[in-house]
Length: 145
Image (cartoon, rainbow, N blue to C red; front, side):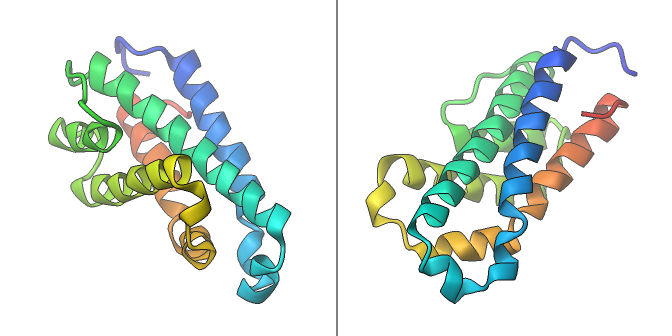
């Protein structure tokens, strides 16, 4: 394990939050879009878990930006850009996580206006980005998160 000025306990807790949310979200594509869209409580829960996972990813990002890149982002999306510029995560992953952070903002601030098919699409196609994020960080930190 690298001797880094990071709080591994905090990072592991946030990684655990991401994994718990992903465990809820991963089975959703198997039910199909039609069944997903007819389950109002399931849609609400999936939006909540997307927020939880994204918030935890942002919390990790803010911690690493401050501790390793020595920068404070002006907004959630900028944080991932800082990590990429500091070579903490890859640029392609940063771009995808920036989109996720922006979608999180929509979920928080315009909850009623969110297209539920878009949520389903994100669940089907973008959750792996969070796994990649945790994997890239584990390689950097030389320890499991």
